[in-house]
Image (cartoon, rainbow, N blue to C red):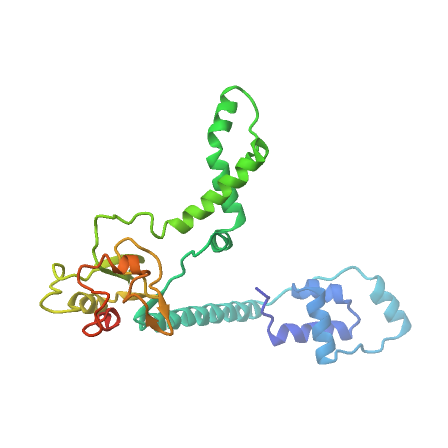
Length: 281
């Protein structure tokens, strides 16, 4: 963060310059960079005061001087720092207040291996590959041998393992789905625990049969937010719901296959409560 220098200290710098002090000397006196001094000199038009020849020689060869910052100057500098810190804190608080008024919470999921690596970073992925080859190096260590970088053990296998790890992150969107369970749910963000969870919205849960959408309205009142983009309503599916032109293609599911598992929604239904109307966030 750049240093904050008040006008009085720059006035000191201007006076020193007029008396023949070098830019480096002024920079040391003000505890700033030579570049900062040069910029202020050019901007404010600092000028040298003509001195007699003897004075010029004496000034050039005199020992370096040190300049003390008075207590009042130090206090003003500290006050400026405090004001800046307070302004930053206020801005952060305002941003949090604005965010708290939103009823949605945006998330980003990995849709392909390239996005996984871009988000986690190449070094993180390389570390995971090294762990995958850990058994080989563990055995070498037991034998008193040096560890070998995973890439040098088997370059071809290294690339295969790397690709598998990246793909595994993508597959996690659906890998935990229980094929024997077809619970319909809506993904919500809990601001108190800072976690995303799955709220069941079926007749047997949360009084949905008698009061459609009551659970979602109750959690919304508690500050929970709807995850956006809207995510598939299949329990444990973390894909985005498929949309086209701003409308759900599969009534809130990511695919026709997942829509077919919903015991309450018929693919041929053309009227009634849709997923988007039911959510009501």
